[in-house]
Amino acid sequence: MLNKTFIQNLNLRLLPLILSLGLVGCWTNPLTHPPIECLMKLNNSLCPDKKLLEKWSPFLFLSLLPESTVTISNLTNHSIVETGFVVGTVSAGQPYVNVWTDDILHTQVPVIDGTWRYALPAKAVSNTFWTYGSLHTITVHLPFEKPKTIQVRKGTNHDTDGDGYPDLIVSATPANNVQGYGYVYRTNSITKQLTTTPDTTLTDGQTTGTYFGSRIGSGDFNGDGYADILVGAQAYSGAIGRVYEFLSRGQSGIPSQNLNAGGSADAILDGVTGGGRFGTNIIGADINYDGYDDAAFASPWENELFIFFSQGITAISSQNTNTANFVFKNPTRITPPVNPDDNFGSWAYPGDVNGDGFQDLVVSAATYSSNLGRIYIFVSNQGSLPASPQQMLVAPLEPAPGCAAGVGCFFGSAFVLDYFNGDNCIDLAVGGYSFNSYQGIVHIYHSTCDPINPYGSVPNATLLGPSTASCSINRCNFGGTLASGDTNGDGRPDLLIGATGAGAIAGIGDVYLVLNDPITGFRNMNLSAGESADSLFSGANAISNFSMSLKLQDTNADGLQDIVISEPTTTNRVYTFQSVRGGVPASQNLNLGGVASQTLAPPAGTSLGNSFADLSRKAKIYLWALVEKTKEYFGMI
Image (cartoon, rainbow, N blue to C red; front, side, top):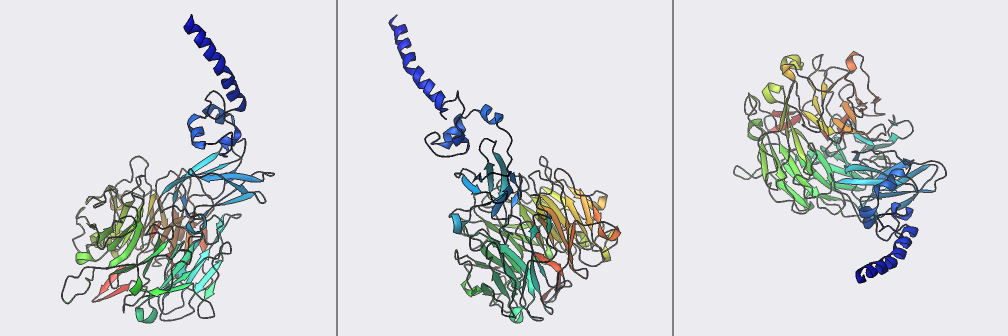
């Protein structure tokens, strides 16, 4: 009896508390729905802790809300973020939308003429930043509607004016005896096309002796959320080399500059080694993990690598390679000390090979050991690169005849880093265009995430080029250029493989799209045995180097990466081919009536598309020819 009375008294005391919690819709009460303040992630007396809300809020309440009327215009689920901003639209009459990333408290973003624009983390603005390759969520929300959330991966910033859409940053210069240019083509959000006339034109105004535009790169070097540009002039001052930095001015983008007519660069970086051709390869990435992109320069002419750290909001300051923050030259192998001539610096990319959140560095030496080729992997120690590489990946000896036979493979003359198997450790695809007397080969390696030897000696997949009998002068050059990106929106990067000598008409040039299966990954493929790629793109004219540069980037404002291919020699064109969500773009032969989604021609200069600004979405090489002790590009210098 006493026990029963105690229970009755306890119930009488608890009942008012339960009723009061229900009346105010307390977020801690699992029997009632949370107030709208909690769904909006507002911190107030009704919702002091959104994390507890996430733990206790019943799914039923959210399911009763109408679908979101807010749109994200420039990104979709699985998009690669190549901008510093998220943009979208909303129905008329809404004064603001709530936007947040990851677990950051939401921001009320004002709506102007039915559109909104939200700045992603940028070191100089928010004192926070995203690292290259990292995964994030972006959520948008209106009161009394379901929130809309997408997952994205951080890429390289190519948006010079902050409109939310990556710009096509491309150079046009065939050699050091003509005037070179760098161009920026913006994306028109209304027409869903790249502008046909460049919005920015950069040139040094010199008609000889500089090779301005031999390489172009981008990154956010001052941390303001806008893409900046680096342009190489590798033949400057007797082939010592120079690089120019051009910073964005915000929403007006990068102003056009003619350095021979009163224009100026924001900074100038100079080489000091005679014949070193500083500026041959340009990479923008946050190497030291401070939130600002740094500049890395690799040159196979003297087997050198230099890295200049950003100075923060002032970006990279003018200096020469004597004051570079990181320098690596190949170990000497003969006396007196000189660098071995193995083309160290044929190409270089940063990427997180072991998944610790810091950018490592991968550099190739394409002519190592009689053109066998190898890859150097420098694994970062919390933002600091080691003095020597932890791993050297040598070309495999299989399949027959192997990379050690004949003219070798030039293993590493082109390569890309990307998250092929979807984990947090970046994977590697390496081209060897001279395999089997220029048939060509591509090897794909999945990272093991090991901090010492992240890549195994045996590739996870091997792709073989077409028969040399079908190619121009029996040289297909399959794997001479590479690019990677998600063409169908499944969250797995696919692979573009260039072969400048291939084609139904020999020498017209082919580009092969090979899809990456989300479950099984890349398949082994042998084009010479009658197998085929998922899509095939062929050039407009023979011997015009169709596929010399490849890129995957959103060019039609749908958040999906499209295919961009250059045909610089004679044709002087860049073509785009729109990707298909959940499908495969149709094959196109431009010589036989095929059509591109868009064709770009420069207002001045030749060889448009001799290089694109990119980090891991494109790998461009010049096919190496060894003439005694000199290094020359086929048809370039």
